[in-house]
Amino acid sequence: MENYKKEVLSRKNQQKIKSFFKYVKGIGTAIKVPQSVYLFSKYPGIGKTHLAIAALKKAARAIAEEEYKKKETVRQGLFPYHTNWAPVYFLNVAEGLMDIRNDFSGSDKDFSQSRIYQNVKLARLVVLDDIFNEIRFSPFVLETLLYWVDYRLKNNLATIFTSNHNFELFLTEESSPISDERLQAVARNTASRVSKMVKGFMIALESSPETDYRQKMNP
Ligand SMILES: Nc1ncnc2c1ncn2[C@@H]1O[C@H](COP(=O)(O)OP(=O)(O)OP(=O)(O)O)[C@@H](O)[C@H]1O
Ligand SMILES: [Mg+2]
Image (cartoon, rainbow, N blue to C red):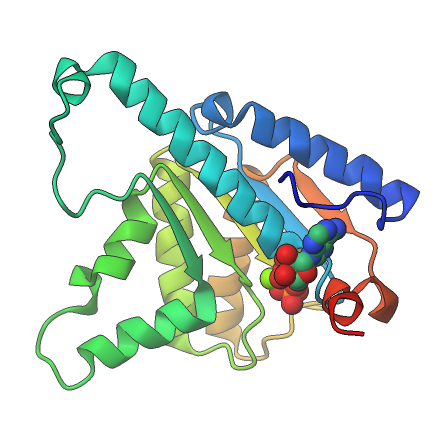
């Protein structure tokens, strides 16, 4: 957060980022509300992933402090958690889904037992990085996303989404990039839940090829 340069942003984007900074400042409360966020920009490199990770780090610290206050065992230096416990979790959607698929292909085990899969379900705060950026919307991709999002909504768990696609596209037949009717419905159900989770925190950044910070870093 500290190394994020606001001055390179347009005035409008600075305003939008301000609301995200406020969100991060109160992250301890935000994950309890729960309030989720959608960080969207059409063009890449404007800092969505950077900001999402900053929020995740802050949340990890807030959770650690809370656990320390709450649990005598923690204050004694013990670790009263399951070794699999992941209070916060970052997942790049495309990479994560590929890992899950690779780990379980050819095995007779159910992929829902995957650690990645479980962490995305259960962590107090999850970043789903590059959601809806898939080149191919396969049944596996769309059904897994729906399952995760539905689970997190029902269980009052906050999520930070980053994307180069506005989830609203998937809400209507006319704008949906998916032609298959059944898969279109799966994506619509996911988008509708995302919409509910991020109400008031859809941060759509104005972007262009010129706002790509990666180009600025490597002149
Ligand atoms: N305003 C900024 N100040 C400092 N560093 C920045 C800023 N914006 C972006 N960066 C840096 O630029 C690089 C690209 O940013 P990041 O990956 O967060 O972009 P993104 O919006 O997630 O892009 P994409 O759409 O491709 O996923 C990162 O190394 C990030 O730390
Ligand atoms: Mg990114």
